[in-house]
Length: 267
Image (cartoon, rainbow, N blue to C red; front, side, top):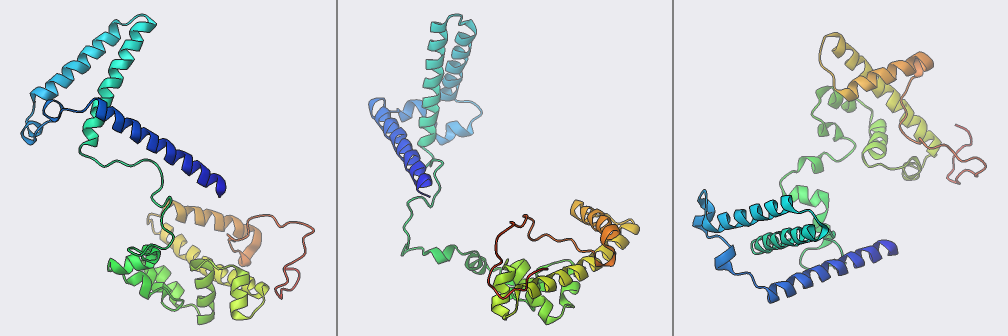
């Protein structure tokens, strides 16, 4: 964390130095608005005298670049291009308020009074925008309303209340099995077995639905086709107890004692 702060501080210092150099250059060589900047009528016109002068300068530098042969000649060309780029950037800065690549929350006030941090919460911003559905249906017993697919909605709605709670907290709230076990006063082994049962039932229904859909000649998404292929391959190995497991993909470390959470050894 300290390394990141040091990097941001260096970037901020470099950005401030660039702004200072730009301001000093502008003081030494001020931009004459009547010479460089175009009026609204000139901008709207297909051509203008000021725009034509800039194009003539750029064309002259291009010809100078084509005629350059020595290193000194190319140095002169580079200086001329840099001068044209600086003039263009100065014209743009007259109309735009540009910022660097630093994140907006860098050196932000920890507890601002005008716009508190909690006002940036996703749920609050959705509510202020008038999107209430995600907030109203954000519970185990109404989560089937969060999807527009009628089959998936009906499939989740038909679950028992116990299965809805486990599916909601593990899949939507992203709780771990240990956290949910503590909340329900159960063993995490029991929670994992219940999760496997829920996934097995849902995946079996989804496979049957997608398989029939494919047989009827309906189009499937890439994710749906991958699910059918993966489920079919596992069904040949595991039989009727097939289930695609997404959790705990990392290998378990050997020799490490189990957590003291009331679990039963061996799964």
